[in-house]
Amino acid sequence: MIIKQWKVGIFLFDDVEVLDFAGPFEVLSVTSFDDGAKPFQVETVSEQDKIIYARNGLKVKADYCFDSMPKFDILIIPGGLGARKKEIHNNKVIDWIKREMKNVQIMSSVCTGALLLAKAGLLDEKKATTHWASVNRLKNEFPQVDVQQGVKYVDEESIITSAGISAGINMSFHIVRKLLGVNVALDTAKRMEYDIEFK
Image 1 (cartoon, one colour):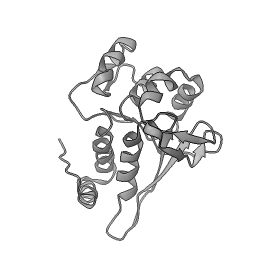
Image 2: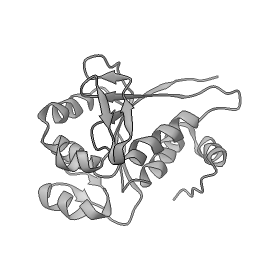
Image 3: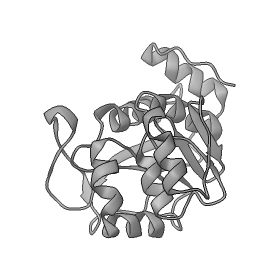
Image 4: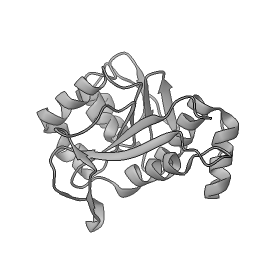
């Protein structure tokens, strides 16, 4: 029997890195108990109600826009060219992230999504990580962030950041373990045929 089902929102935007959002979507959507019950309800959200053009031309349509979205327990902010070139300068998005931090149990980022969390002031005086190619940018533009290198993810309780692209999968398994225990996380990894080791 499920004690709780977490509503997970994954932010989509133009030029989002595909695996940044698809990896966490797959891990959390696949997670289930022996009776088939699913502890995560995973949905997507974008700023506006329109088609999103992800990296390399993949077209996706979010379940919700900012104006129609429900309350999420977990919010995942992916990265990609769109994050580091456009969304970091989008005040509506940054304000939304800042506002949603008060509503969620876990705010997380994948890859350069960490830049958006930093711009929203959520990483001040916290450890965080990002894609190796953007580590120096995170350090230089946000010196108040304790940037970590050589790790797949950093857990700061209510905020979890991951390194680049595929590291979002590792972070998602960590979220499963954090909320549901190591056995559920390992069962999910086995179902996905994904090799995972927890530190």
